[in-house]
Image 1 (cartoon, helix red, strand yellow):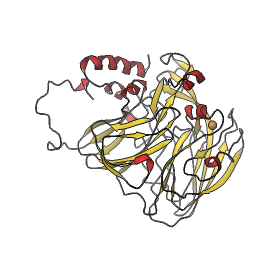
Image 2 (image 1 turned 120 degrees about the horizontal axis):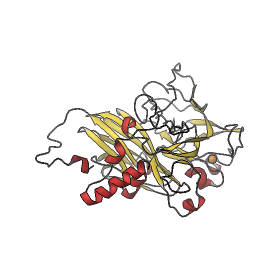
Image 3 (image 1 turned 120 degrees about the vertical axis):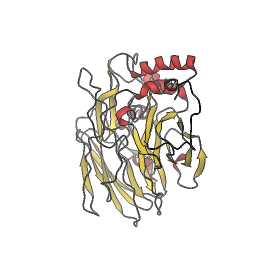
Image 4 (image 1 turned 180 degrees about the vertical axis):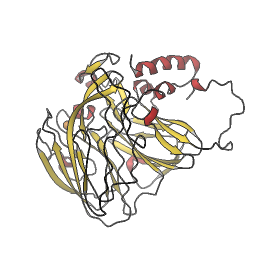
Length: 394
Ligand SMILES: [Cu+2]
């Protein structure tokens, strides 16, 4: 039985014990981290990075050292090899902050790939992706920039793909001019008129199927003054997946149109797979760090009640809007095809679990861990007396 099955067992125990059940998801092996190399570009130049799968993304000036990986500091081999030798998808990186600069021309190149990978232990699925990751590469520009976006469809794809960016003002958000068959490419420009954090997704028929197979990502449009500096930025997107058959059954599962239409996902996960952000791939910070999470929902169907267990969001950018910012928030609603930004300072060490507080979805994989290391301050939190059943809680 897969990891979700393990979590289900823990859930049953949790109901009896009055505990929550995230712990069952934590100790499991995690997918392989990104294979994208950090480029070292001369200042002011545009460069290209390549993944092992051949995906490439032209990154704007400023991309390079200092970029925080979503799920840890270094790629590591996955322990989750199936009989077929599959691993989980690589993880996308967070694009570097823009900093202070005038509006400019920014060029991006993104390639769509159809990739079979592990969604859970022994459970594989053929994802459709931007850049061979779920979510796709984070695009990051400044308000007022002109963005020249080239979308390529890999020659070995079976289907046409496209891109609709919610940051675009224009026909279909770009989807009208980027419907491309395998081996084709399309290029268009748009002006980033409005600051904020926006979802992009494929908009080729059947659109919800393309989204359900993983074709979404975020584009961050920073305001002229930029975003406040933080110690760590992370990139997380929630998605609901619809697989044929029993999800505990090992092997390659087909997409289920019926389950998607009925809105009955058998997986709800962060960053494309069960365990993508747990175990050795947990997000990491030190006590006292200021953390920012770019959190989006690809869907195609479920909204998210985004919450970090044991933390309070000092700031939330509601619906991805950079102004005004809300303060002191416990849970924030993130719409399908929408995004948010949460910021908080990590005041106390421990493992903090990212969840959709529609907690039934935890049993479908929706959990990530922020691991905070450092000294404990008893003024913040102090256990006076406990029978020591810590493993029953969360
Ligand atoms: Cu597509």
